[in-house]
Image (cartoon, rainbow, N blue to C red; front, side, top):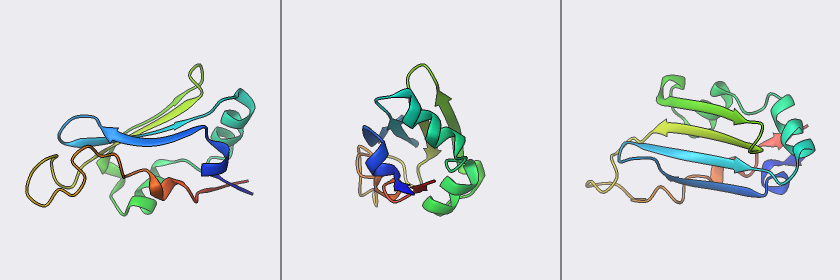
Length: 103
């Protein structure tokens, strides 16, 4: 098994508006991308469990074969820039993805 952080070329998060965050998982070759997709490890269930949110809070889980990437968009618990928001740009939200194990 390998950690996702060791397989992906890019793991990042960013704002996708004031009420949602997008996680991007990008690969530099098709075989690695396909390995991750075929492992069925990145699912609504696994992401909701990892981020401790309901599946309904994940608005997109998209596999881009041509772009060798996976995009996950989820609702923010606190809108960007309001009182209590600790990551205005959503740039620090991808770390939980690092240790996902891929068979």
